[in-house]
Length: 268
Image (cartoon, rainbow, N blue to C red; front, top):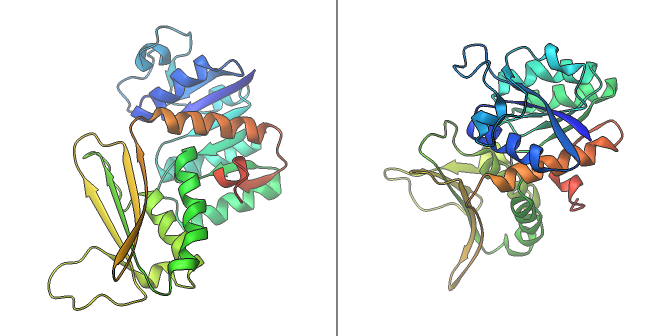
């Protein structure tokens, strides 16, 4: 069994991960970490996750559990993730990162850790369906790009702090690369006022927030007379948790390197 620690164990995603790890015959929870001021420190992680006592209390010191951990799953904040990454690699554990948003500098730092034997997977979305959407967009965009306007629309719950979502940003990067554009230069984030006619080369990016929406993403290819839409809708965080566990099992036998879910699913 792969002894696994969850960073961010008291959050919505962390609780789902705890429950899914305990239900998986190949994994077992060995540690649960939260920020030092978390009001749930000292509580049993299973009780917090709603599955009853499992004998693993939520703590704030990663070093307390690393010696007994083979894998770490981190769904926290970028600063926490980047502080934890070198410690996880030094301990010889694999690291699965679902934290967003990670900058290009963050990714470069993670890549550098692979030279020290790090086995790391970082992705803005663990969902199998979303990663299929990534692959489809990479294939469809070059076919349609010359004659179709491209717009990306995402919606999440009203407590999400970053916009656009990491998944939407990754979609934008994939679409830009597939059509010979530059994501940073050619992406237009929303529109307001007298902005003029839409330019042919831009990629529209729109973030909606409301209610308890887990995550909806739509890529629209629009031309005169027709429209092609590729959509993924997540109704439960369980899909992300299952993807993270799948990533742990992949890394357990992978050589040192920086991976994403495209590698896990054989879509690259």
